[in-house]
Image (tube, rainbow, N blue to C red; front, side):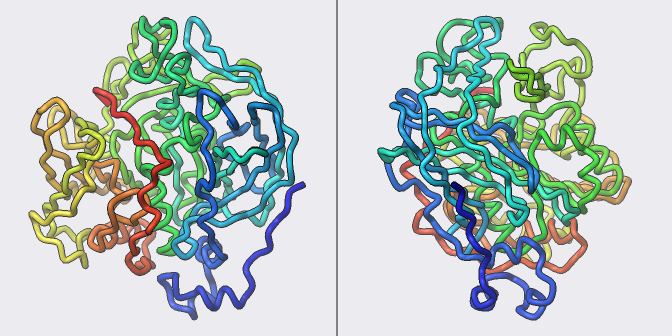
Length: 516
């Protein structure tokens, strides 16, 4: 049923080699897997080409049995179609691919589809665990490069929607990328029907009150589709970074929050660990793993903001499958588990682990959607600014928002040396309060460097798919950080050009939430 597509021919490799920021001789002699992968022919067909399913009629919706899968292992896809009809699945790996953003890895034949049972919230916790049956299983080919994969679902009458998952390879790449699936799920209010859907937020939760005393859930499940388009926040805050890092030829392998939870020691296999965009919800085990890696000499980059702001924990699904439920009571008094894994703000009691002691800065406030402000450089004599040609007070337009971090003097700084604030970007938050966003860098006692961007929209300055357009100075600054992490000369490619498909009418803006 599943048609595998062949790898690119040598001729294609020779033609496309100039798109990679290393020399042809170096690439042909020893390309890393990401460089080689992005020589394959790309396509923009991963984007919607027909009507998009909605969460009211559920024309086609689905979710994966696991957020990530190793090469050679099996992943299930649980799909519901309304009315019952056949559907196909097209698998795309996301990357640069000549600026087209994706590579078609394979497409199924027509799969018989059924209308699966409605997803009913638990009356106490608000948990929505759909419990759908698998519709299709895929043993991931060992030739598939680690990365973020979109599954485009197309019903027989033409409706489309998506699922998202990560393919892991377990190799010791220079950089390990963590996809923030906990945050995807925290904001997921499937079904987004304004009647029954629930997330961890009051603003997006409907129906009867829960133990929280409001409509919000205190538990959310991976056993349900992501709302609306089905890809979480990937196309808002991460896609530009993924396009840029792969265009630049860095040696990167991909994982998820859950992989950090289950196998934190894997972080020690890479020179650097990075989290991108909106990575708000962390478990204690995730925090422990990243700090352990930092203290063992692994460099850490937080190319986002609001990181590790809320502590969660995992529970099993209704069918007993472990780690399929994300728990967050928000207020400690509501949580039946008291102690190190109580679910609340990370900086608050009883957790008492301010993010700043790991990140260097921490969450402060936010602006409305579309109201991003400029990044304002400071301490540009710091060597991390080498080659950017930036001076103190220079602006990079529109990359600070919608949530921001800053240095907060009432909380401790991380141990180490070389601590510096790299920006001081003034803004007025949604409540009319004047504030400042910072980015930062420091060197831990182990020798590891830690960088924090202090803005969720950092990736907007690297490419032009989701954001307003790349800025060569921010590209150089980001390359400087990754070069320091990996200990090598930059492999950053040419500056990205504006993608004519950048403004997506099919991509709904997320709703901002007071407080985080």
